[in-house]
Image (tube, rainbow, N blue to C red; front, side, top):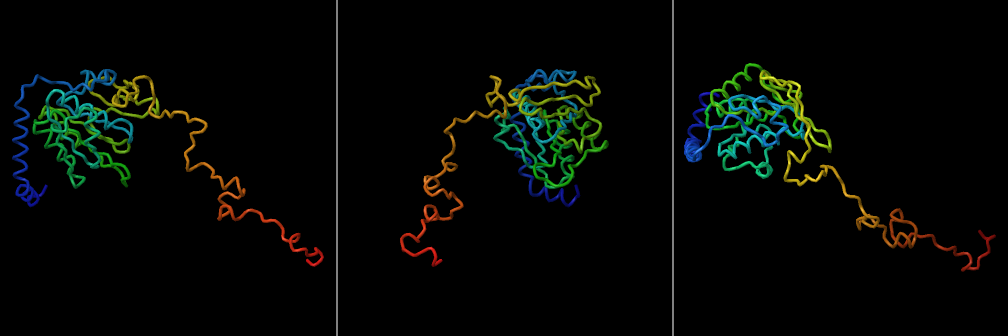
Length: 289
């Protein structure tokens, strides 16, 4: 960041920074127990990592396509930190984090700082500063393109990945990177999420220095979204069968279709039916025609 930009930010946001610092001091004043691992509450996912969950002080990458469960899995880690009365931060690169949906997964919005950098190159810088501060138990860096975005997603190189891992180690918190398969990060533990259709979703350990590479778990959608009430075995895409006479009114044929047989092609309902011949009524000989 340039010196001029830092001066502008300092002049405009000095009071905001002081307010955030005071709020952080108030939230951190509550008694807390020692925390080394963030457990998502999904035993199959937590068992994939050697520490039994997401380890604090490290960087973990969640790589997957859109709607593969990567963002919801990151929200589960944030919710786990909030259950321990800790603070979290979310660097929302694509600017698509929906707070009501996050709250539905157990996220405490009062303990979540959402940062939305205007420039793409500021995402990594913001995540490094937040993780290095030590004030946040979990920092999520969303590097995906977002829905409808054009072009490739920004890729984290080895040098930037080392900065992120070092910031997580110094701050003592968890740093989660959300990436796309076409732009994965380098040098950090990677979990790949995939959608299994209506049946559920899967998580696989693709890269890990602590072991467990190749471990994979397949879970139903109800494990990730318990608020949907699918515990009875229902599927995300199940559709209830329609009754025989459950056709919407706007698809039913009107009475005028049966009256003149022309339907919508008649242009004038009830007026374009076949007309009887006028010859018999006029008494004109057929030879005249």
